[in-house]
Image (cartoon, rainbow, N blue to C red; front, side, top):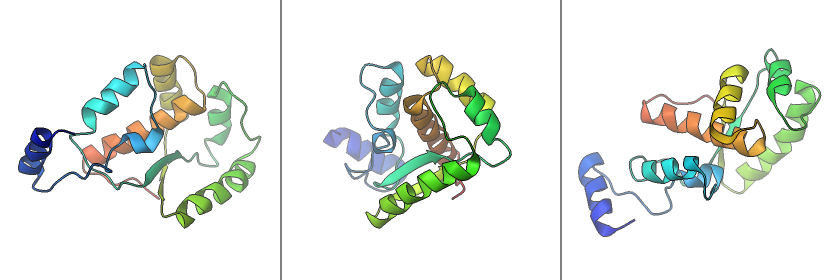
Length: 145
């Protein structure tokens, strides 16, 4: 970020934006995609913890629909999903990374993923989770853990 943009950010929000506080850390870089350019445009307007990962977390009630709308292979049950992902979340937490569980509607997620990525796969779901987290942060709402 240029010095000018940093100063504008400091003036607008009353604090400095550290270079490590970039939303792209949430989902990685999707180079060459329209979504990536939108994230880059937003990264200078918001600040979030530097080590934050958005993680879609289906409920037991909507898990069957989550599996049905996904194009790639998924765990057969919600319990299997939790058992497979709990160690991943614990490992991230042990490294000091905050994992933000994002509750969602599977049909809205599928529509967004197909519109933005053409498929409902891990890459698209990760981007959707980051988008939801970003929108909640911008609106002042705090996502649920």
